[in-house]
Length: 412
Length: 70
Image 1 (tube, one colour):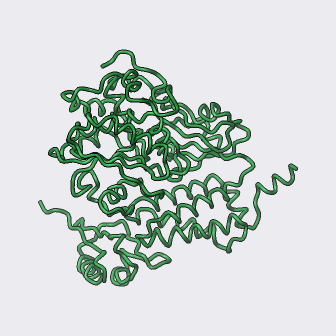
Image 2 (spheres, rainbow over the protein chains, first blue to last red):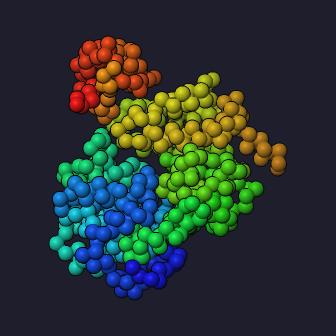
Image 3 (cartoon, rainbow over the protein chains, first blue to last red):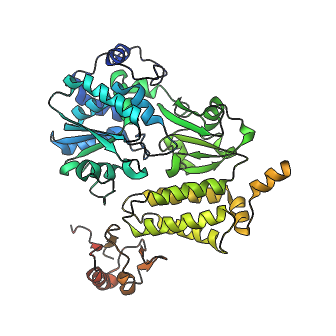
């Protein structure tokens, strides 16, 4: 292990792509091949959890693939980043492409993969260009492995792991039934490690500096660090690297948010949940602690809603988007999300049918677990949190008026 | 109690709704005609009816999973 690990771990460097030489100067030589199989144990000891959204322990995932692989696994580097409120993955690939490549190489050696697929959102052009240049510089490191750059369609579900595997096989970004999950049977039937680019980048750093280094970061009971995208009612929307366990309030403050101007916070993105401002402010950005509150770190989105905005209207726009992003394979998701989006929009525009609020509440409870993937679960989870946090607003909208408009008018 | 459970292939299911007609004890339909499974194991008494519902599904989307016998 190297002794001197840098702090400000990922984004203390350039905002344009770092060259391979600069990358190597920063963190030293790539781990020798003979030591790469130890990486799984180090990752398990580190406690690193995936950053794509689900938060699955990274070491355990690598081991699951390695146990089944027999040297013929596939590593799918997931840089689809379809979450509209997140910029972390594209920024990471753009600024530190070689760190992501290091992670991909280590993963391929650790799990026994002969093929690496680099899957990048087609709309993330700068990221794709930077990764393409980095891969060209690293041909020697890939040796005889097959390497493929693959465009992820610009849809919300393209990053869902079974959909990503499907794109690699058939070109269609449609989720498939699970089980089997990709780690059991993925691309061309092979055990496939689908891993988010931030997870791979952090895994590469942990492989260099050790699990104790990673566990030495973090606040309170939380360990490690992560990237969060802060947006909405802040003076400086930005990507921020934080020690896990930092509070939402600290992150908001650093981005220039004024607490009195904030009404609520969306945590975890469109698969996440709203939290009331006073509840959100002390929330620690950490998977385990957020789970106890019924929240999720997800892909690290922190989006602040201003006191001037209407939570019903914003939620309605999100539900419309989520309905539009259904893969249209499963009836409950296709019809259920469309109906929910329409009713929520009627509520938002204060033209609700008499029982719209009751209906979206009932439909939300019915939809969970009734799709091949968790798209409907994520969408209705967000809506349920909205109904809880903006309860008075939803009730007012059902009666035909918007509290925020009234407030704004009387203030003016 | 057998521990047998019903499962639906959500991609295949087209909402014909025969399953809910044949097995209302465990399956209801949502507002669009798609099945909602009660999260209960299938009791011995219901097994024959569950099998009939499985056989009736026109798109083979309904399955009855028996636990592995020891």
